[in-house]
Image (cartoon, rainbow, N blue to C red; front, top):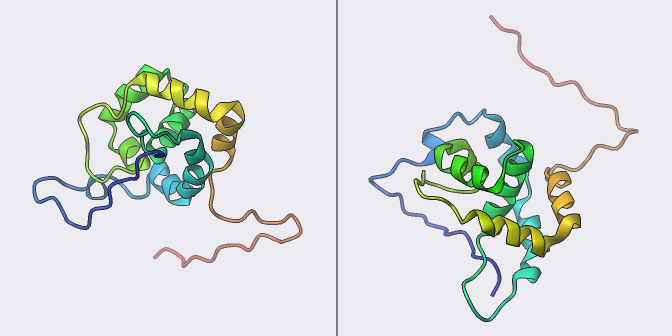
Length: 150
């Protein structure tokens, strides 16, 4: 049994507003979340969390997002988990559909995840962000065309 799979619901909760209706979709974390290939992390790390006993590991996207935010904002494990509760952009980045008021995990879970994935995969997390293919150096950058403002 590997990490938990994110809950895929097609029903809307009548009494809660979705995060995408609360946040600015042009925010940098929203745009970055769209570029990251989250499935690559699940594919790479799931074999390290196979167990037949105990609770399943936390969702891979949640943990990858928390580890990224911890590094990006230079926070401690405790601080990143506490700030996650207060920030709808961080929750959206980690794959949440609705705003949550409780902690996503115990801060010690981040320590255990880092120990399991190792330092090499931690570096891989920080460098493997985009699902866009990298442009070769011999390809010239095409300027974007935009209409003039009126």
